[in-house]
Amino acid sequence: MSISAIMGISLSGMQAQQTRLAATANNVANAMTPGYDRLETSFTSRAQGGVSATVAPSDGPVADDTSNVDLASEMLSLVETEIGFKANAAAWETGADIWDVLLSIKRD
Image (cartoon, rainbow, N blue to C red; front, side, top):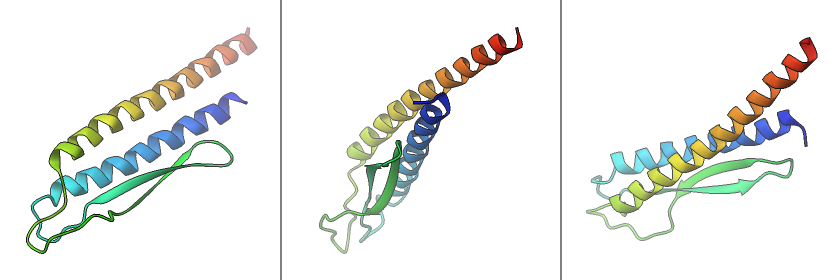
């Protein structure tokens, strides 16, 4: 696997976490909206490597006078998103560092 492929995979991971973050932020913003159905993010592995994220309303019950958003679950989602993003960012930075070393070797 090439360095650029690894960096592409980590980029897809960061983009997927960004999608999850947007869905979570939307859920928190609408937690007090009557009838709001929380958004759930699903991750799918790509055949060529990496991951994609899709967002869809939950299958959970929604009452007309409340939402089905649990703020504790949304905060946990934020923590998981941060960890996932940081892990992918570290992989990206490692790939960039390796590219820098290879370019340095090539110049010398």
